[in-house]
Image (cartoon, rainbow, N blue to C red; front, side):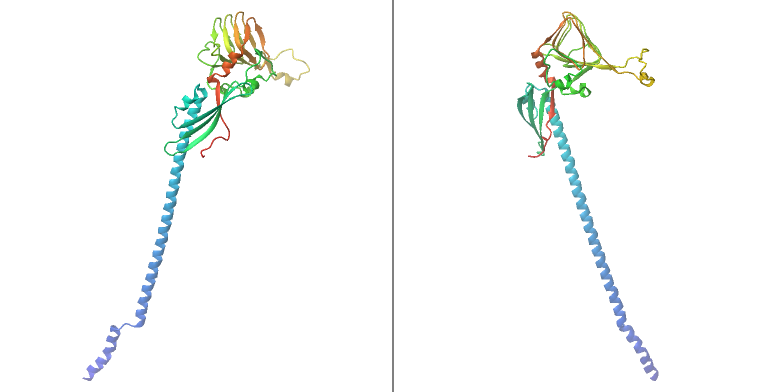
Length: 334
């Protein structure tokens, strides 16, 4: 019995320790649980921040995409409106009845004010508004229609290097006076076929054969001869304005050069003006006027009939009208 008692007394503490864990063990497990909860909280906060950042980025990208779409749509509408205005003004430039022309464009609103210039030019100020039917966007701009021949000559023949005839008639100096100044020029190298056009720009000499008639009193023409002579054969007629532009030539070196000129100077080519020649044969007639920016050698056996009504009809021809936008008049708001 003593052995049993001793055994019981020895074994009892071990059982007690197994059945009841110590406070240190309980404290360690609680610390682990707290750390896990904190870690989960931190992870949750980070996930929330990431979600917020993704949402903000998505919203920004969506906003940028919508703004880009609106910008593209706006530019497309503006391009359509600009193209419509260009087509309308091009038709108004040559139109005899501007109201009928404006009526062809359903989205257009056009008003016109007519003026008479200081030199009796016919001027028209157009106010054009083009509206898009879906977006209600619109553009508005003013245009001035004026003749390409700003002024007409005062006499039948005007020539001379210092007469400033081009600035007077066209408000252009020779360097800026090109075929592209006119809306629809016919550019050619000779005068063999001067029909079905209003403006003829000849690069070289112009020879109009006998019995040929160019233009008429009601439909005169503008004939520009660049660097060439003008010849009107017997019984030939032309109605309108003839403009002769001078040329420069490079003559060959002469063996009779002045001894005072150095060899370096004499070897350089001399640029001298060559006067164009205007020949009007017997019984030939030019009805209108002839002008030149240089002295012209005249061989006149026929005559030039200075006709103001023919020149005025040429100035007012629909094909010789130009359309210029008024600076500062464009806007897309009321």
